[in-house]
Length: 117
Image (cartoon, rainbow, N blue to C red; front, side, top):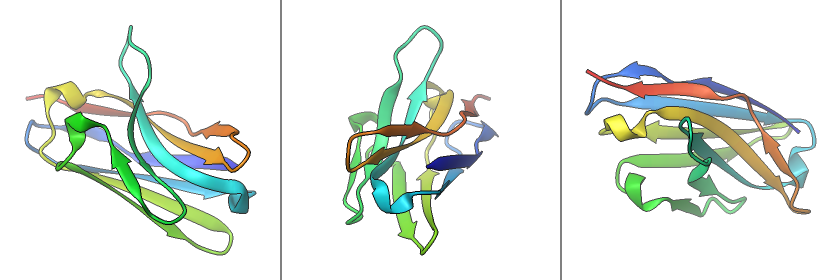
């Protein structure tokens, strides 16, 4: 499974950004996809996940502000996360993640999100 992430950037507090991830390869092996984030000196934390049935979960700090969605195509899977009302504490490197039915984790390259005035 290969994950290609895009999006991110610099935005002012209260602004919006969209992250996208394309999964290719053995996508039929994927159950859960999601986004994690990490700031220097801290552990990587889960932000949002969505399963094959499109049931989503969010960390409390982003509920009501972030929305994750997923589209499953024949050879690829698209995952998008819309981030609204961004706060400085959302600043981090965001990583796309996929978990197979066997529990194997796959990671995309990180994309920087910076929320600053």
